[in-house]
Image (tube, rainbow, N blue to C red):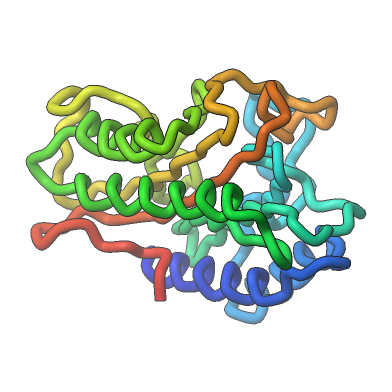
Length: 243
């Protein structure tokens, strides 16, 4: 799983380095496909078909721009100066998966947008710090929620992290809001993806576009997303999707 995580980290770095005004989303997706293949890995998202979607996912990455919270399909859209882009990537090595996401500015982005992206990173860091053997899942969720709420941001209903292993999405679900000292006891060896998603408008409501995948804010406000896959060890959380 560490190998799969490193593939994801390298792919995110390559794609983030190519983000600029004038770039098409599908070109970033092609770059990700080439980067994953060059490392002898397989994309986790391409062809993924859960029961709640009408069609299999058509991309290697989820590329969500501005008001898209998650699951944005990479197509012909051209990035513009000031856009906020969430890049979500999954890859597998020998049947084991890694999953991570970052939110990056496209050219010059206003201060409010940068704060929104930074809040997702800080919420993720808080969640990771709380993920220790002997704690409970609610401790992780509460740590994420505290950062989001402090910034006045919304937490989209029903969207959050998950277990990771031989399937990209496994139990347990990892909500981005919760009560401390409640929920599943965290034990050494558990691997989860923690992924805060924040909405600038402060609302929790959202809707899915006609493509069956892209989830957008209900009020048109921007969103940010950050994610790492981590393993719980006796020495604390180990981030698998970082180099």
